[in-house]
Image (tube, rainbow, N blue to C red; front, side):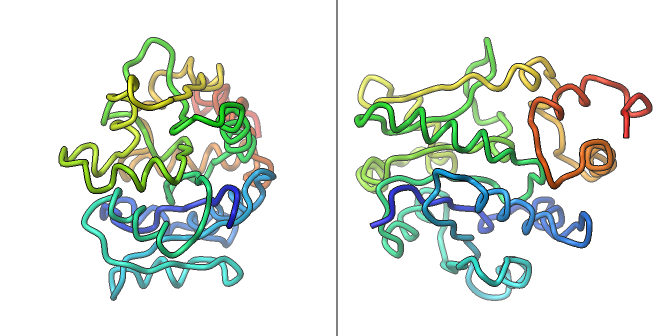
Length: 239
């Protein structure tokens, strides 16, 4: 059994997300950058990419690195997708990450895993903005989420709320009397940039991503530097 599996969500994507993960940075797709940032995490014992079965998952299977397994399955929502994944891969816990955010900082993943492992009762761990209620409108794709596998197995048949089924983290946050939840503050540099909560959600945002990439170099992601750059006009970015 694996200790902590990294799961990159390349299934149940919106049209925008599908287009985003195909875009290229330095000759690599956004999906490949995300997967490689996950494989760089020290506290993950494996990484898998999820894809839809059939032609809708062809793009993910084509873009995923050859040395990282792709699990293709049919699921109606995220909780069903995770249940199917846990049936295929035996792991004590897992980190769930969106497939289309090219600036994932591996340090954020390792910090999240470390925090969750400090309490053996922990069921769910995530990052949260200061003074903001965790809601369906938060940018899930920008930050990793940690889940204890047994906790997800135990709720998969109980959840009926469509928001909880699509965004399982909200279930644990809405039931904190029954489950142990660990919330970490979003790194200060990003927390200060209120617009990141809604940024990178349409086609026009790709230009900002390219500017960030040119300014920092995607080979050495540092979320603090991203936060500082987002706080400056694009014209002031130092390359």
